[in-house]
Image 1 (tube, rainbow, N blue to C red):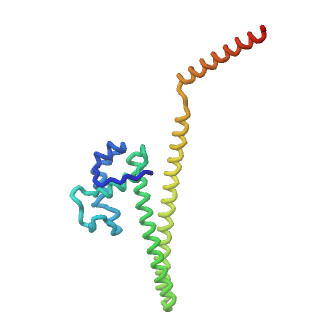
Image 2: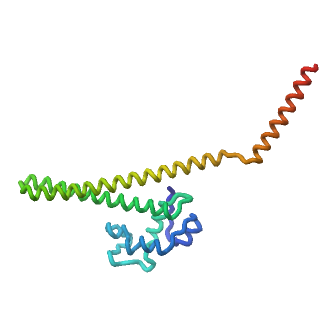
Image 3: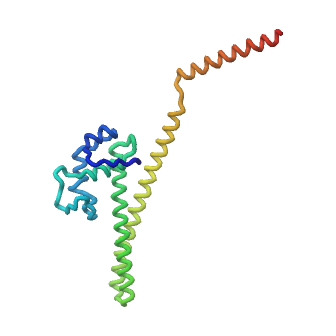
Length: 193
């Protein structure tokens, strides 16, 4: 993947520079209204749930999306990578919540809490563990698909670069014929001498 560090950029400029055009409606849908960064308290502009920038997304978000793009990627490939990013964020949050619950569980055991409280805590821990595991598996499978696709693309690029045209084949054949006829003339001269 290649990263672009661009201070001010709009989707029209990205369309010309990378070949990928992300419509404003898509950017607004993933942007401020449903921003994953806001939901995790990581908004670069410090916006809260109801707040939004005038255009509905920030340049940082647009630059981040474009940093997920490889040369020749479609908008679907960028969305796929973004969804994997969101899944991974959620998996990390779930794992953190699981660890927090585990500490509470250990504290309950140390204080001699009742078996009902322990069972409820175990069920909550198992739920977080299952969700974390499921999200992790999804991320691993998704990343595997991306790597496979990129490997196939690289293999295809290598194969394409080694192909020769029909004209080049004819030129090589003509050179071979000329060399063969010159060699046979040279051999005839040698035998006649």
